[in-house]
Amino acid sequence: MANDFVTEASLREPAAGTVLKPASLALSVGDLKKYRISKRESQEKFWGRFGVTQSSGSRFETGLAIPAPVALLLKLYVNGKLNDGDLLG
Image 1 (cartoon, one colour):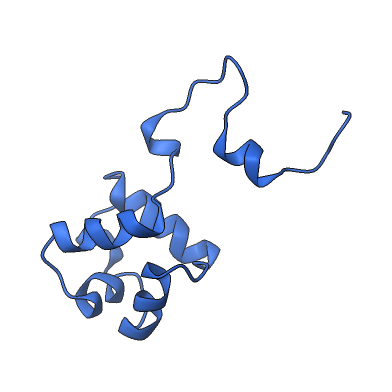
Image 2 (cartoon, rainbow, N blue to C red; image 1 turned 30 degrees about the vertical axis):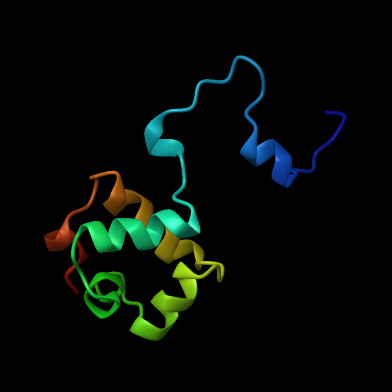
């Protein structure tokens, strides 16, 4: 391999011939807030299902990096692989 590093550009722009499935796409920061609002949920209710406080959820919606475990749960939830019942502690 000529370059073992993954650049931000390579994550945004798929290589020629690569097919991206909708489930593999991540939500952008703006999309997270829009998704939560489309569900008509408060930050407290929405983020609480992932074990996140309202305060942290607000920060995630404005661009703070989401921890990997939360990001994984969020991605599975948005793509319909998990539901509210699956996320109950």
